[in-house]
Length: 193
Image 1 (cartoon, rainbow, N blue to C red):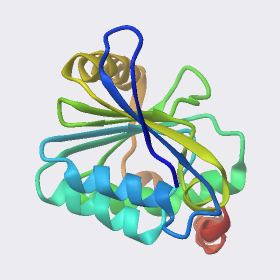
Image 2: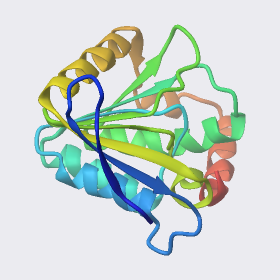
Image 3: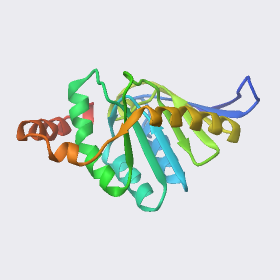
Image 4: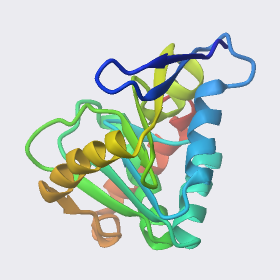
């Protein structure tokens, strides 16, 4: 893959542009996500419309929470793909039990793809936190090293958290057997979702 460094027009902040796609032998998109998750020391806030992580990413998120990082993920309450919604459900309970906070955005469908790492590193791009973005789709990621931009992104995410409800593991446990079975079957399709 090709990496390029370009200034942000508004403040001259350094931005790293990373194009990724299925032709990459290194699975660049997945590696960028894993690197950012593993780099977090105090805060990791993520917004993604689709959430079907691979096992390595799911483990990295859990490990970040277990080492004391404030891990928050905001997902849309309203979905446009039922199979993706069911597959995501299979990951949420284990993440919450490890200390990850899951927020379900209420006002409508949330389509932004953002990641905030600590107080200085931000990612905005086209990639969802799912296997399709990691391995099947062409995506574009932009990484910005800027406390000012990180502060602005934190305000955006805080506003989204305020308009969200917190997901609890009981939401899975209290569902009927049919729903839990559908979640288990949907997880089988996770590698292609």
